[in-house]
Image (cartoon, rainbow, N blue to C red; front, side, top):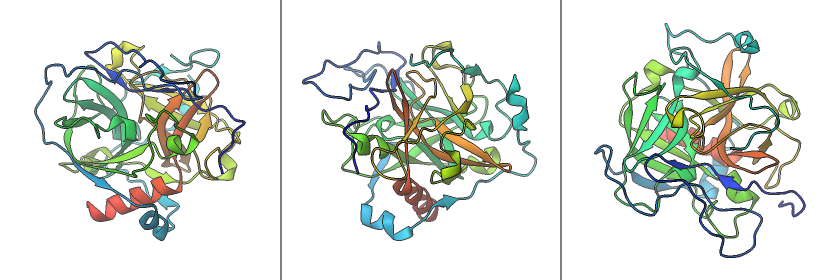
Length: 313
């Protein structure tokens, strides 16, 4: 059920590398501002790749699965990070984002940068062998002719082989670009990208879960993305000790209101937990304001992850 009392997040975090990021003027008063950095013109193509097929899902098909969890995968020979090592432009108090340089260690080996052929970029993570979870507003649904590439461990370039996106899966009927966008538009601001190769077999992939009660108001979550305000989106920054607040404006599974520090370019980046060594993603970065950062996710997103793994092995 929607809450009219809680403030909505107020900026969508998509960036264009070649076009100055500037909000689109608002047509009317509302509680949700416009996306950042959608280019008005198409710059010179950065690369030439396949144009993704668009696959739409229905609420009915997602609800049939009743899925609440999808397992993670750590390849043999890939080192998993010991989270005790963690001791060492929407910022809450001090900026807690930290440059992350070890892109070979899991789970960071499964995270990377999403690049449009036009220069726009976002963040994302492998959620299956050839499946990338990101924000729906990071998908060029209204930009025909745009191709995309996912580059795991991107750091001043592509250190590992990336892959092109062949298919985009999303749930229609929800859009954070809608002038009357609400909390459910944010909750369903997710997309699953299908790649043309199984990068997860070498890089690993995150699991996925619906939020559990024990995680609410518990500062144990993590996030990583490619912020435009730090290293111009060329290097990954992560944050730990993120808290999900006890407030769910759409339904009992999301969106996820947090205190994460974020900026343009980090859209689609994962928020995840370490559950006894298993890394489970809870959602993707969608939007932010001066008081909160909200991640898309929830029961429909989990159902989409499970179905994408089945339909696109």
